Image (tube, rainbow, N blue to C red):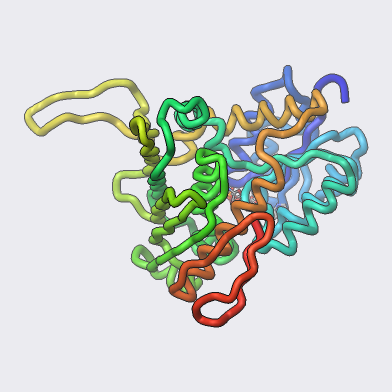
Length: 352
Ligand SMILES: NC(=O)c1ccc[n+]([C@@H]2O[C@H](COP(=O)([O-])OP(=O)(O)OC[C@H]3O[C@@H](n4cnc5c(N)ncnc54)[C@H](O)[C@@H]3O)[C@@H](O)[C@H]2O)c1
């Protein structure tokens, strides 16, 4: 296409509002065309706050409008796959929040629809657009760190999301660790060959009630024997916590947590810094950069930076972790296909 794409947004909850602000902040990159959310109260509140004249609870407002070029999908997880298919079916490119779907079959149907339509699909792994993670990736690619022997990637949320969100989230690995799975495979530049996971429910009755976990460790082994460890928690008493250490044969690099202001105070009680309390603040710049990247890809007919295949592999890793946690056994993971009898004689198939 030529010119600025006309973009519709589905979902104006926590992350949908971030995307809305970023779309509206870049009139040079896109024309905001319509907002849809199934919750009438939310749509009325947000449409009035942002003075949007085209807003509805009906997705036909976007999918039936041939002048809309692209759609941003930020509704609840279980809706993503159907909206990706609808976007492809109406010839629109799509940006979807993670995960693409709650299972690999639905993911494959959505990706097949995009493939058939020849449209674009970008997945919302915003860490790739964070300046800290981008520098880490550069240090790996340039060889500065030498051979990467270990990656430790921790991410903890201030507190668990509401029970209604948890019930529909697909569980900790698909909902939260999926960012870590994508980040580690992107940094490392390859997929692991084995996944082992343990997890517990320690932080809230809500998590136990929906039969989920909130605290987990996933270890991954790569073909050359190098290792990665992912740690997640739904609760962190001091606020959002994201820390990644890449340990290579030449040195190490730490992408640390961030300060709101570049100030450190020293007094009799110790040394104090402020701290970005939530992921919306920590990754504000990354959310904006990923959206600009998507808009540029649509406008210039070029490949998106984070593909449907990336989204699928991260989900496959989440599924491998879930199987490992439930079986108590390491799960082989391979590309393009791994099929093996597990030590418990169950056949396990995880396709990357
Ligand atoms: N990339 C990230 O860092 C990040 C952060 C948060 C959430 N997410 C993802 O974004 C999605 C939304 O999460 P959230 O935290 O904003 O949730 P949320 O519950 O705050 O918002 C979801 C919104 O979707 C709307 N909705 C639900 N079903 C719908 C439907 N069928 N059609 C249209 N609208 C519908 C709801 O009314 C609500 O306004 C989830 O898939 C989540 O995994 C990603």
